[in-house]
Structures are given as structure tokens and as C-alpha cells.
Image (cartoon, rainbow, N blue to C red; front, side, top):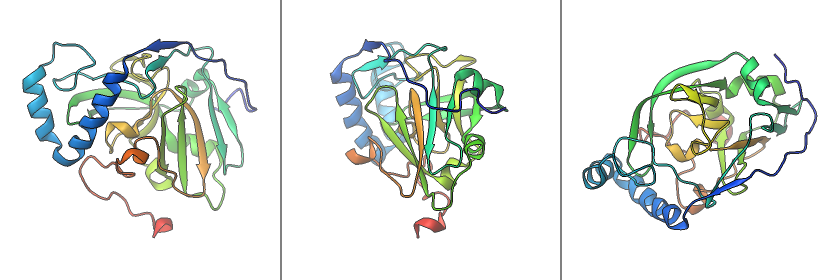
Length: 240
């Protein structure tokens, strides 16, 4: 079903829930280590911290919730908008109702943070990113996508080929419930084959562009292609 809001709609400024800067700085340092050591980091941190010290500590068997902007933007269901623009034939503005009216995709998959911790069998539900791209109609010359967050700071990128993988979705449900604010709700990106930093929280905009534009974490030393299995992933002939 096409979105009910096809033109640009002004977004309301989202209220903020503050979190500590030291948490962000600590997670960034641990991420750099996690890229190198992977599961070894998880084992050490899990043994040191366990799973009962809350959502801000790395290690253990639960999500570790943090943000790069020192706050969580709070977006209500009725205020949520997702803008799709750039090299597309039909720029779109999706409401949450629009997304939920589209064919849904659901599956369970492990979530793996680049710092080493994982959460097994996380259930995800949302719209395949490929379906959103098909609705907007990608123009010739498009190579990649950039993603923006309601937090005003975080950004991410994928090539078009990566964006069309079946486990790349615009998610509005996880863990059997609507995506919560700390988890990046009401709508977040989920990139199943890649480390968690690629799964942008509080997704606000998708831009189709003519080149890969490194995101927030890539500009700070993380791989642009964050494959969880250490592979180079699918080959995109447009990048060769």
C-alpha cells in the first residue's frame, strides 16, 4: 500500500532523555577492541560483569543500550515520519501507519555488537528495505543509501546491493513488542548480516545517493562494510 503522506511533512522536534557521555566514550573504545578480538571480548566482559548490572554495561546476555548523542529522542507514534529522497522517482514520506500497512517481514536472529556481546534469537518485524526502495523507484546512477537518525548525530550507509538483502529491514517491532525508545523506536534500521552499529536507531531519513558516504562510526575508524562473519560480503560491481 502506498504511503498516505507523499509530500514533505515538517517534523516536530523530539523530546530528549539524557544519558551519560562516559557511557558513549566507553562503548566507542570497546568497539575498537571488539573489531579485532570479537567473541574473546564478549567472554571476558561477560565473566567480569555478568547479566544483572543493567543495560548500560557491556557484557552479559542482554542488550547494552547507549546513544552517540547523550540522549534518547522521544518520537510518538503519531509524530513519526520517515523521509525517502535523493535519486528516486517518487520521494516519499512514510508514517508508522504507512509502514505497518506494507507487507511485513519477520524473523529471529542473533544481534551482535562490535564490542563482542550478543543477544540470541531476537525477533524482528518490519518492512524490507528493498520494498521501500521499490515503492520510491530508484533512479539510474544510484549506488548507495545514507541513513539519518532523529538524534541529529548518528548516520549510516549501505550500498544498494546490501540494502536489498532479505534481512535488512525497517523495523517497528522487536522482542515481541513495538520498538521502544531506548532500542531506537518507534522505527529503526536492522541490518542482520552486519554488526549492530550498522542498525541505525531512531531512523528518520533514507537518502539514495551516487556514492558510499561513510557514517558516524565509519568516520571514527569502524569498517564501512561491517559484516559479522568477517567476510567482504556480496561484491557490488558498481564499486569495482
